[in-house]
Image (cartoon, rainbow over all chains, first blue to last red; front, side):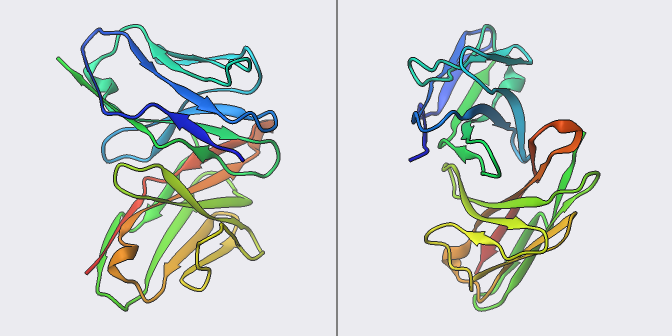
Length: 112
Length: 117
């Protein structure tokens, strides 16, 4: 089936630390891959996406590369800030009128 | 940018009553809207897919008679939780899909927290 697995949190980092949140997906079809972020008290926002193998999505210093060989889409940021504290969701979507399928989310807390 | 609103943002109701949640796409038309449910510290679980002018498609295990979905227009979908019980307490999130500008994007509302006492 279509599923997404991401590392469990919570993840606590000091400001300016390097961030990696792992995400893998089942290799069914040729999905587009996404990272969404949910800040406290707010709705989900699209952070970045990649639609085909080897594509790299990037936004606000975050990056993720679509790796077909490892069925992964790990999220990275070189230097996190306190304002990055949020819950991050990895998601996949098959082509056509199909919904997003989300991972369980990873809560990130960045401390000063 | 595209904005999706939900109303109310939170609601408390008594067991046995019904609650209606509205989802609106404010500046675009959405032929498809999705309803998700999010449990504490859990992921979003897709409940149903709603297409304008047709019946909603429910995911396995979701009671269609309990969670009534109406997609009356291209900018409004409603979810009614009928005869609510405490186990229905959750965070409900809607999402609207648009193909404007040749893109295929899905935008999320801020969610509605339902507490059933």
